[in-house]
Figure 1 (cartoon, rainbow, N blue to C red):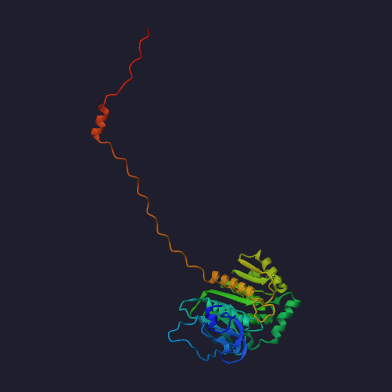
Figure 2 (figure 1 turned 60 degrees about the vertical axis):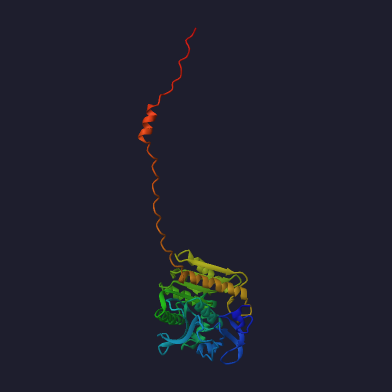
Length: 349
């Protein structure tokens, strides 16, 4: 057990994780999100409302690794022209790479919030469109997406409903890139399940992205959609996930016809939604292995190591010293010395 876990009095808590505990705001024991190292544990509703009660931090305590806020961004995809979202901003005063998370029809689940908190702690600015609180997105979209997968072979990217969702996510991506501390040249997408398929469809329309990370995606229609993606793709899934294995086969086939770098990770024994703490087959080791692979991929693509400084040119080696010249007197003495000769052989008798 780590020292920071002791501060929370939750022996199995990991920061950025969903656990069963008492919410610091509403006081109800339920599934809560561990937000900060100091003490904050919030349920999903209070996380969205950002209602802090108090803090036991001493004056001069270091800043938290990130801050969260609710925003409204302009979008013509919803009635009224604006849609809600949650933004997590690292407190380090540098230009941040950014990640847009594309939720599916279930909205801001514990998996999506878990991903946002983990990414923000790594230094990424994160935006999560709140799809369930956006007007016009409801049960009809839910049934349409699942009907497409069951009867049409995958999420129908060209359908009107999916096009509306992609328009909303495009507006969210433009808002994220326009934020003050975001580096627009280093933006990525992340999605899980149906949200991963929507992320792939959005990446096929936006060539300015730097990376796309997909966790157990479902199939798409058309199946060769990944050929239009021009950035590195990570697809992580379980070998016991039939739904995601079909999408993986589509990506593997499209890899042959594109120059993009594809990276596949198959976790042994993992099923669909293995990152979800709400699933009955949730396994901590498998989920942490998945998050490690996802964060490592995003760091390689968005936070590459700085270039090495040029090496100092080496000085040319000094020429070898010439052998000392023979002094004239010694040379003369050598030439004046008599040369010894052998005596002649005796005459024959």
